[in-house]
Image (tube, rainbow, N blue to C red; front, top):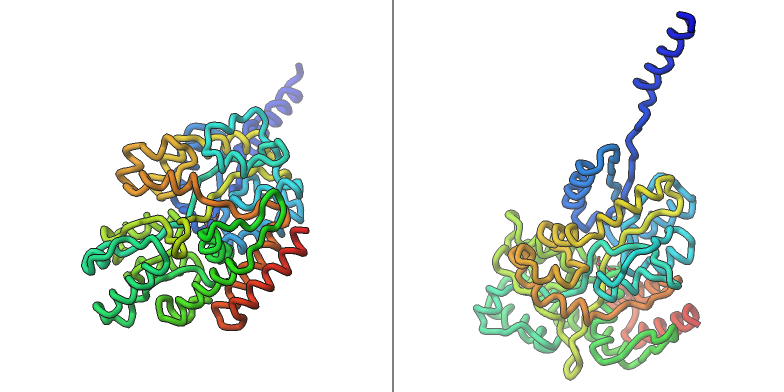
Length: 411
Ligand code: GLC
């Protein structure tokens, strides 16, 4: 071997070593819902990076509400963008994503380890299209200190709740204290706003893919919420209130009751909260004579069909969906576990004692309709709820509109 060749070979080898490392890091980008503790997920990603040298995980967030995030992701996925590897998806979306071919399926995954609702939501046409990130349901948060002061038990009906807010308002004489904060803005959460009292009358919206709309029950649901505004139980501009607004209002001490999801708990207990140690959590009330019902929520991790790191992404998602991570997110971010056993984990119960009763709520919570056309279903319901609360439409007209439009979508 001559000297020139050797020198050349050495130069090439060292260039390879320094400018193009033989084992370049795999960069994975995960879309995380901004409302669901990205800072806590970051800690999980840090642990993963330490255990898996050569893998780096970046977080991307965007949009404050589920439908705003969906709009962003729809744009990214329609453009077949390879930038995002993993997508955190609201429980209502896997069916749509699978139909669009936007997620790649997992094979050989035992889904029976998860709560059945999440096994179902992530299995589309026999294929596992995403794995659960965390469970969720809607709850009634209440000011335990105020209810105790006035000798009131957590309400089981909406009528009891209205009476409780009136009694407390008369006693407290605080114009800044609202009775109830709930979601009236035209966001995804307003679909659940409509369905809670509707379901509590024992009615379903869709059965076996067919619309089972009950007009009277829909009118009663919309009347209940509009009545709360008219009677001063809820504030006049409730039509502008989104999920995280409710969370902030209750956290600032300006609402007796709040309808919200589990993530709110950890915020209520933090150092800046005006209500730490004063919060009770109960099942959501029913309309008089009905059964208490909650809306099933939750988020999943799907691997983008356009990711250029399929195997690495799936490996990370398996980890993110593990019981250890589920417990970690429950303890540090009050996100409900997708594993039944985690609800009796002592660390979880120390961080959120009410999770002991939450398993039953998640297990009996009702699902929003599962359909690839869910975006349209959602839009019809949430814009109508908003219009009724803003006084633009009546409960009667609102119910008629929802029925007519859903009939066209779910034909
Ligand atoms: C929560 C739920 C999700 C729901 C959303 C509505 O994030 O987990 O399923 O769609 O709230 O605002």
